[in-house]
Image (cartoon, rainbow, N blue to C red; front, top):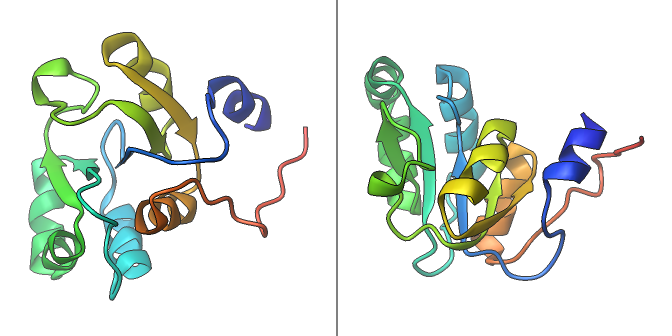
Length: 142
């Protein structure tokens, strides 16, 4: 895990332009965790922050009120597609934080992006601050 994170992370500090989580598709529990982490907060400025999920998870998350929480805080739910596919990856360029090894692997080959792998909490904090935030409690040892 640590070696993969190091190999697939192109930046570890400074500004970030976007956040994409949930690739290939977030399970219901991850959508709920994201809603919990960002509740009462807001993505800074116009930074794109998307969570990918399938349509069934989207419906379940909507029923639980999590989709309202996400959209109110600046997170865009995306169903049934991947945001490294150029036709749907609007506004994704520059430095993108992600909690997904799959996204970190494919996105730089498809889009004008550099990626950094992070925990879900690190992704949320980075989006709220508009700069890379690393969790001091997350110890990575090779």
